[in-house]
Image 1 (tube, rainbow, N blue to C red):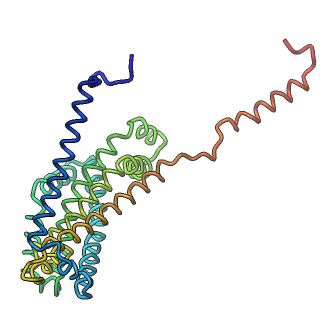
Image 2 (cartoon, helix red, strand yellow):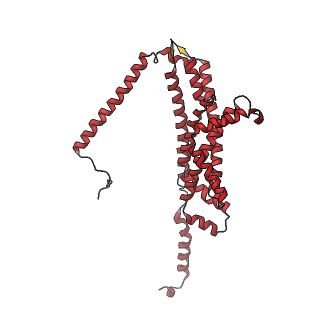
Image 3 (spheres, helix red, strand yellow):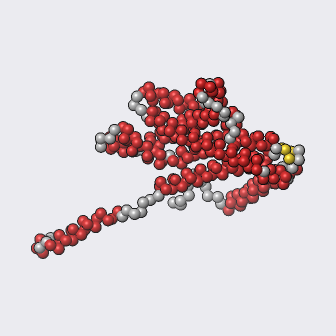
Length: 307
């Protein structure tokens, strides 16, 4: 039986020719749309050198740099807090105590169901109205509202990811750990969680990429992250009577893509290091002393003792 899947019919000569024609037509259509978009942008003056020359200004570069640093700062704090919260919620949801398990389940389901934008806006209003009582100044209400919103949402998602990884660990390992006399905390920290994190690492990193992209929601609460900075630049910078939305969107979008690709590359590197085989251990080495001992005993034994 051939290695082809039974759910897939290998195309014949006519089907292959037809697929080639469709591929060429599709590629030409995409190229046509790209060419049309460039022509329209050029007609609107968005491709003029003067429009793109705004990125040579020191003030524009400084604004972009500050926006990137602010975005990365929010992401770093929210990523760490969401992982910690996800770990706590995972342990709570797997608890033997029903009240704790129900409370963790309700928290997770609530913040996974509520749109993140609403969560961030509600937290911003709460922090803004209680700014004096909490000792917040300047842009701190916006910062902590964005961080808290990202934390509760992504922490709830990370909790479900970790719980799925723990449930995927074979039950025999947990039973063996209990048979050795380990406590539930020891089983969780030394047996279940390491394997769950290793198995679900790609999903965890993918959710961190979502966290990085969701920092752009800070512009709703006027927090000066990268997207809000881009909005201010495209609104306030006018060249030849035209706005600069398109150049700013292209540059800022490229920065977002670069940051997400860098995080994905880091995740791939970590995953490869975690799954890299350890080739320094020889399996057959333990049998060599036994074979040598058997050979020595055979040499010392009398000739008549052998069968």
